[in-house]
Length: 228
Image 1 (cartoon, helix red, strand yellow):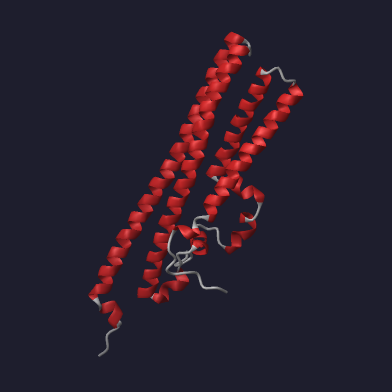
Image 2 (cartoon, rainbow, N blue to C red):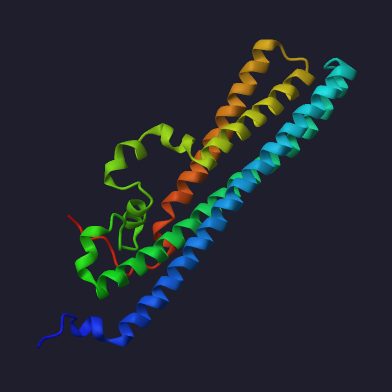
């Protein structure tokens, strides 16, 4: 009479390993959830500060009719909003890097699952490899999404990209108000605002791109994706 279980399945150490791996997997999932919560909280805080500043400026405009006092107060308040926006984008980039690390950890755990039960490999749609391509596959940004990732507009649909556009708009408003305070014409004000918007947005997108390119070297690769 033969047993239906293999020696590996009958080994009590395998069950213990699976329990440890599953516990760590759930821990990383909970940590990812906290990362997403903080990201959304940061964005909401920035939008709250921006909304409060706009309401405050509307009240000042009613009292001063867009005079010198309004321009001075507006530049000060929008500078504070601009600082909060830059800090928010920076924190979002840091949280994205943290999320990348949690994904790498889950990919390594998935690799351990497949070492214990390689017959389950066809079932998984996520990656067991802990390099950047493997993380992108797990995040749903694998080779099938390469055309989308390669477009200029992909960065604008992410949280850091979206907030960067708003921050650049605030920077353009500050520059336009400053030009107005110096008595510039409407054409010059528009030109200064457009240049400020483009400059701030270019710097922030470049910072985000550099942060993304640093994801791969941020951790030691132990199970690289096989080259095809």
